[in-house]
Length: 280
Ligand code: NDP
Image 1 (spheres, protein in one colour):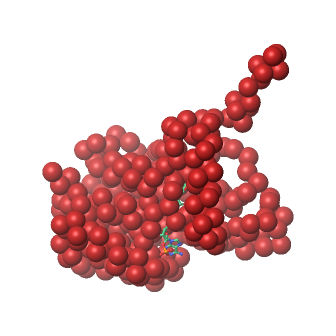
Image 2 (cartoon, rainbow, N blue to C red; image 1 turned 30 degrees about the vertical axis):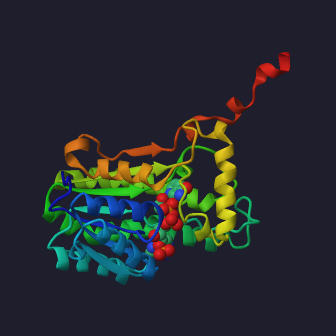
Image 3 (cartoon, helix red, strand yellow; image 1 turned 120 degrees about the horizontal axis):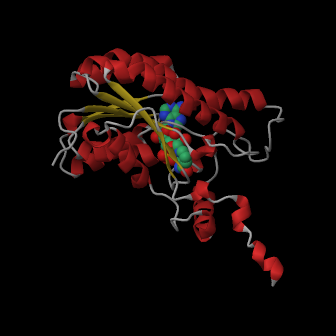
């Protein structure tokens, strides 16, 4: 059963990780999909993987470019509508953390630069491309926007990745504002907040693949921080994105931020310490 047959989807940041898996699942469930990111070869590889699974190459359109560039945002939307005739679903997934390995807190000499970079990619580009896409989403009727935030946005104190967390918290609030504004026009907007997911996310910070592997292995050993007993894989998040983009399944969810983190945000620091050990 092709649940997204006849639908046209844009997945930003689909050259790796969660976005690549999401684009793959939309394509194999019948949608025409625009895939986009800066790494052209990764996008070609994804297209090949989709075609090998039996999907026509004509269902996939590639746009290479930096999503923070307004001309690239316009190209993504306009080329999609010109190739596939309309736009039904926009997944704002592209994102990354900009920080310095040695940086703790908000007093780095590069604080404002780091703030700008995190905001430009994780928040401003979503605001901008959604506004560009808006008339097409409204024209398509019964259309959907899914923003990809993070549990970094939640109400916890942080001394690392502070500006990323600020950007993602802004994205949660943007989701609610967009949802209220667009629902009268037939466009639903929702958001997913993933916890730790094994992807290219750590290497994108500039660490080598080997370091990224070590961090995921280390995290996997600390099961007390992951009640679901493993860290996430891209399909864990892609499944929720497709659910939120499927009007038949999620029509009554509007403007919500759905946490998908294997329970890690439920585990408070104090609960990791067995206080009864003091009595032994
Ligand atoms: P990846 O690094 O695997 O993928 C990120 C994607 O975003 C890539 O396709 C990358 O493409 C694209 N991207 C990054 N910067 C730009 C840019 N300037 N222009 C265009 N595309 C860009 O990470 P994930 O799949 O894990 O991340 C996907 C989303 O999930 C992000 O929004 C992230 O913040 C969020 N998230 C991830 C978590 C995790 O633990 N993995 C946890 C919580 C949230 P390219 O490099 O080719 O440009």
